[in-house]
Structure formats: C-alpha cells, structure tokens
Image (cartoon, rainbow, N blue to C red; front, top):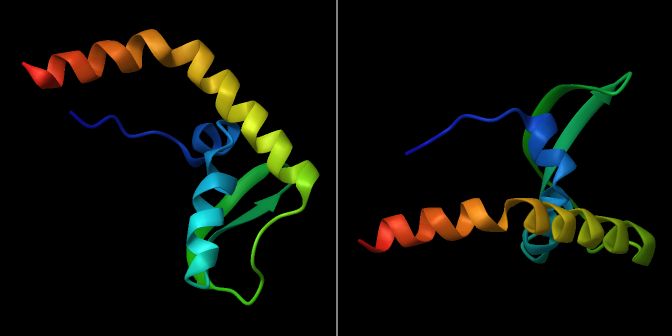
Length: 84
C-alpha cells in the first residue's frame, strides 16, 4: 500500500535532515525551495558541504523521536500485517 503525502508533512517529521546526512556522504542532498513557509519545489542536488550543525541535528532528532512516539502503534501494526 502506498499513501501519497505532502513534502511539508515529511519535512515536519525531521527525516529530511536524517536522509540528507546519509546523502551527504555521497555528495548529494534533497533541496527544499521555500518561500513564505510554503514549499515551492524539492529536488536532488550535488552538494559540496557535509553534515549539519549540532543544533540542527538535535532539533531533527527531537522531531523524529516525537514522530515515532505518535506513530509507533500504526508502524507496529503495519509491520505485523506485512509479516503474515
């Protein structure tokens, strides 16, 4: 099953930074063009920078933790359904 989601929802989870941490190893990143708090475009790009500052990483980890806290029952149910 696939449920299409908006980039804004994905961004709120904190996963953008986590994914970009992995992509940075390869010199890539997902770039979000944002104007007035609205996402105008998202695209992959080659980048020279690697990693993020400690505050940005901590903020993302907190968002991911909160996402897991709110969604763990649904995630658990989905994985168990897929095992059958």
